[in-house]
Image (cartoon, rainbow, N blue to C red):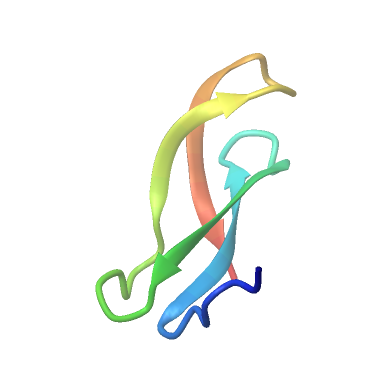
Length: 56
C-alpha cells in the first residue's frame, strides 16, 4: 500500500550537540514548527543522553 502524501511534513536529521554524529531522523510540520527542533536523546557514540538538534 502506498503512503499518503506528506504535505507540510518534511524529513529532518538530528545530530548530537557534543560529537556531531547524525543519529536520528524524524519528520516535522513546517506550519507548526518553524524553528529548529531540539530533543534530549541517547547518543550511542557518547554513550549518554545529549541534546540533539535539527540539521537542515
